Image 1: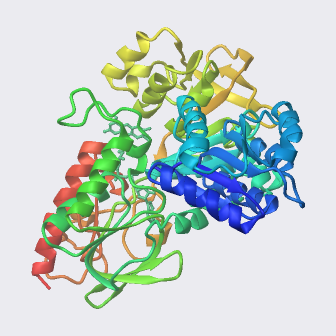
Image 2: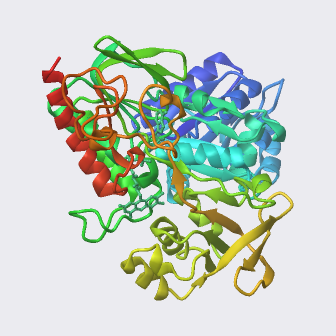
Length: 554
Ligand SMILES: Cc1cc2nc3c(=O)[nH]c(=O)nc-3n(C[C@H](O)[C@H](O)[C@H](O)COP(=O)(O)OP(=O)(O)OC[C@H]3O[C@@H](n4cnc5c(N)ncnc54)[C@H](O)[C@@H]3O)c2cc1C
């Protein structure tokens, strides 16, 4: 927790030194003393402190400074720190000015120079002021601050990225939050350069891309070694399990993740069917625990970092990264999961990130308080979202293409939805249009049975319409099915024990091995996988066993 600040401003070096010395001696263990030798320097220091979100408890300022009087300084400084206590240092001749200032800038006290001995003439006054200040003080937020419009897609992307990478952050809505406006002013950021990201050390980046934010936060995007025993691609449940088991077994293990650990599961508000958690746990929680566990065993995790290609070089499997670097492994596990399927709804693309979302970040739920939310999809992920958002929204409407939820959703979730008063399910229905000026304002719902169409107000449209693998980067290297899922094990065997084309080993592929020896696949991205958190974790763990068997053959 940073110490609150006592700022003293005086253009007389001797007086400044004396005040600084006296304050530090008495309050140095609880407060940080900042001294400035002019009003302008004091204001600049206050601006920097504001950017770092450091609290100022007291301004103790000399009235008689020729460039900028104490009162003039305070007029500006209290814009930044309205709750800081204000005391003027005055000479006898300035008393009238000081008294007038009591009204002008609400001076809390004026002190006559000299104040010796401080025990009698300074500390009592300052103690009182600080006691007062402490009574209303709540410690400031210490993490990253994101200044953005509520409906800014770029702001949403940054908030989602920070949340899913477990970086504490505070979102300051520029329309409603005074401190957001102050941060814009102190950092001299134009409205056109929002979102603004301000870091804990007071530095800031206007309109940043995720790579710049990641670099500033020291997220690890470069590998320590050029070569690993096992390189795992994708940090969803399957990849995280493989990293834990691989590293625990003593394999030098590298896990590479394009967005944030957790994968699809990281977007789940409550996973209720995972063994050992009878009351369920959130996907974010599961991911955080798994990351800690993997790191504890020594796995190295790169995030955000994307794999863009792979090739075979003798016994090495060489991974190409999106930043142009390459890393090699003795074995590779593809655990890249599936990514959401895009829907073509007129008007939706324009409002993407401004009330229309695929797999919406849960961190955003609070901003839909009392809103009307429409959820597209009838699978478990849509059901979980409906349950979660119903805690905040006035009304949640699930729009489902099919005849009933029960064909696509687990019974326990369907029961919960039926028992939740502010969730309505519209079956045989589609959203056929989304409208709004700069954010989602209305949707048109069409019934495929009756042909009826209705346009109704909507705060947000959240889309959970299924997903597909994105494995183009594996094309021409491993066998994939027509949808892009990676084929493994017995599914590769053609006819009567015909091994896959180009297969080089003198054995059949292992159960989770692709058409290239040493490249394994686990989780949702695997052809004919069971899909789900438990099977992903199971396959990730099993893949490590098979990697050991493979390495033993080299
Ligand atoms: C909202 C929601 C709720 C769900 N709830 C449940 C539930 O309650 N119970 C349940 O069993 N299942 C649930 N599921 C499904 C479950 O989350 C998935 O089946 C599971 O996450 C699959 O794990 P995975 O590791 O195979 O892949 P994913 O979770 O998809 O993870 C793959 C990871 O690989 C990364 N990646 C992809 N390509 C690359 C690349 N080229 N380079 C680097 N990284 C890459 C992705 O960014 C991603 O993080 C839910 C899914 C969603 C979306």
